[in-house]
Length: 224
Ligand code: ATP
Ligand code: MG
Image 1: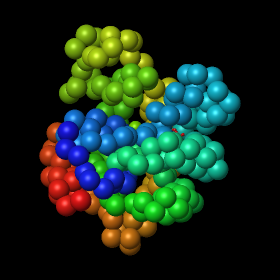
Image 2: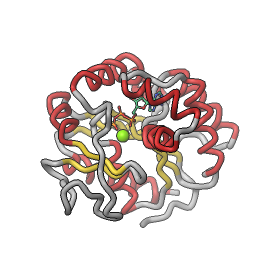
Image 3: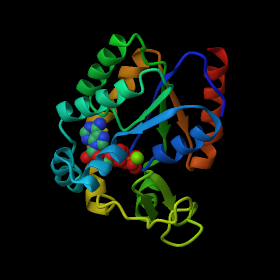
Image 4: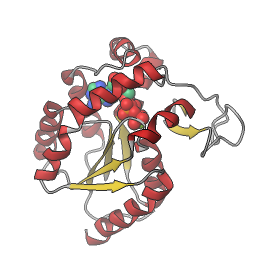
């Protein structure tokens, strides 16, 4: 994968089911980066039965948002561990207070955010994706039964371990997640637009969007 001389700080945003995890996997094939997904991190805490996991499990199952303070602590700890790396954050920040806390944390490392990738996917195509989605929890790898099925049904391609259905990937909970996205997260688009950092990519499928992102990232990696 292509390297960047100066570490980059990037975010990927988009509604639930817009393909953030899928695009992240594809970017990692072409560009050197560490990806941190707040949702994957929380699911690992739940699986491990930690204190954070216990609090998060109920909230996530109901389609709510984990409190800002918990998320900020969790994510700044991860950022600290990966201080000198090129980073892509997925799922964090999700509220304005989280975005402000992230800016403060990055400023104190003298590493401000470079780029915000926004996935702009029509809402009509998203619900079907969620019904077809299966995940490998330890790695965060995502499969879709219609257009990206696992090689062996129900098994992760890399490890052969079982895939699971996310408990929040059902119609009722998904509606709440979408509502939260529109009220809490979508306002961040103008926050980053005002900072001149936002790049939006439009398309109905991940295959259409992936090459557009690749082109944008190639510019960033080349110019550092
Ligand atoms: P997708 O995985 O399809 O992109 P998503 O963005 O809704 O969908 P995740 O990012 O995996 O899903 O997050 C799952 C759940 O974890 C959220 O619905 C929320 O309850 C919780 N969560 C994740 N990140 C945050 C955050 N930054 N702030 C608050 N809650 C969060
Ligand atoms: Mg995700």
